[in-house]
Image 1: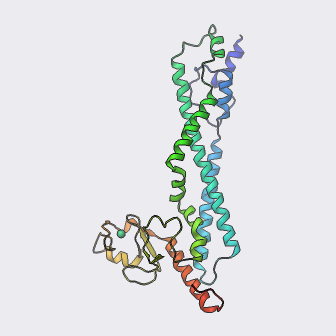
Image 2: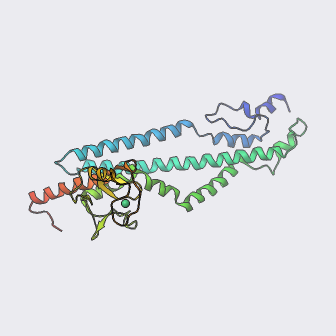
Image 3: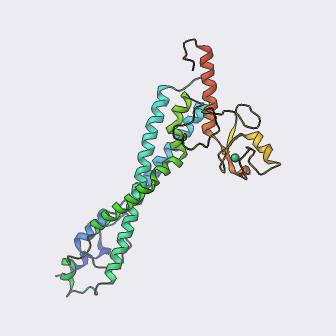
Length: 288
Ligand SMILES: [Zn+2]
């Protein structure tokens, strides 16, 4: 065996990778394993462009919703429906790709550790025993390890429902998913939330009124501690004398910092008044 061939098998002589493997250069690796290794080098650019695409959708959605809320006259156009449907699909698949990529990275890292660990248990690499190394049948195939680790991770993530939770907690996704429903039925609980029972539901309807002033919301704020919703002004003035949620039976301690604008409720109120208006101005609207 000549020197050139043995150099080729050393990891520092690999063609440039986007992700530098963290296995030390002295670890001897079978050519097949090195090739498998190269295949796992997922470009950082992929990760970055996923992030960029996702933040673009978030921004576009925010802008679109602001535009709908600021326009007092019209309801949703076909274009709006098209926008929400397509961005919802795009956001879900981008987030899924991001999630899968993370699982993949974890499985690669685990496998690298395994290889390094295995190499410590082997005798030093010399010209004399090179043939043994290169033909070693018990040597775990990197690619196979990745795949089996990946299967384990995928199973884990599936059983924990991590990804569906991630989607559920994502504000943009939640909004895109429900905006069409809200605009059509502003007082109905969202299909996803019916089981949660956390909304202020009266007679199966969502209240569009501040529980303190009993006026329709103009600037609804939601408590992150207990999910109760209030008009900004009334809850702010309540909190100047108290640090407890004013809803009876709710013991949550809240401060201004626990409140954030409730964009879903804003949309409900807006949609409610748009529907009322069209009911009054049109005689062939189906009244429920
Ligand atoms: Zn509360």
